[in-house]
Amino acid sequence: MASTEDKAANKENVSSWKDSIYNPRTGELLGRTASSWALILLFYLVFYCFLAGMFALTMWVMLLTLDDYVPRYRDRVPFPGLAIRPNSLDIVFNKSDAAQYKTYVDHLEAFLKRYNDTEQEKNEACISGQYYDQESETEMTKKACHFKRGSLSLCSGLSDNSFGYRDGKPCVLLKMNRIIGLKPIGDPYINCTVKKDNPVQMQYFPSEGRFDKMYFPYYGKKAHENYVQPLVAVKLLLTKEDYNKELSVECRVEGSNLRNDDERDKFLGRITFRIKVTE
Image (cartoon, rainbow, N blue to C red; front, side):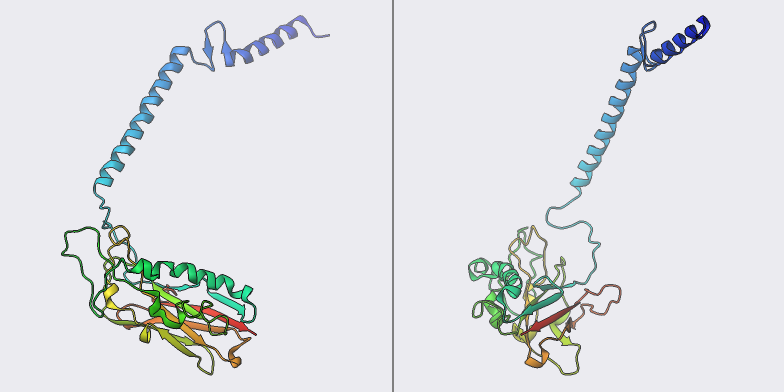
């Protein structure tokens, strides 16, 4: 049996453990009195309110330096990348099965909605071959030149709602990424090549696959709200010999100072995609 001294020791240990949480003799909770807890909580409340105030003040001062229409800092690359629509670098379909190319056709149709005549008639009929420079204008909202999808001809989806996919002669749309203030020197156009022994015939729309200067410069999303990027459509005139083969197609922006040979960025001024059409 436990001795009286052992029982007293155990009782003292239990009492000591409970007192570390709440001591009824001193009124301490977790080693602090109520006034001590009140002071430390007050300190942290004031401290974090001060930090929040400093953060809010810093953000307010920073926002005062920003312009809603023109970015203060432009640290992006000075030359545009090239993008493709439909948004896929692997285009594979059976031309006899509409379900297989429906996704591509739907994507192109949805993308071209902003290029419908009803939308583009709101924009300006600009002078071809000239930059549409609006720097001197006092209006912050800039006018945009119209680009009607009809200029894409056989790849507009107007005369052929399958964009050539039904016939095994698919269309792809190419556009340059937007860069504020960009004015290409020269006459930029798209040139595509297929990596195979026998070349593949292609058609470009608009004529010669050119990006007209009147769509430059771009003034930013808010200032140029109705702006749409100029497009170049490439129609691949594939033959039976090209079917059931994976073709690698590379398209580049040529004829200007826009870079297309940076090995660190495979999409700067160029893009490579694969296409395979089966019967």
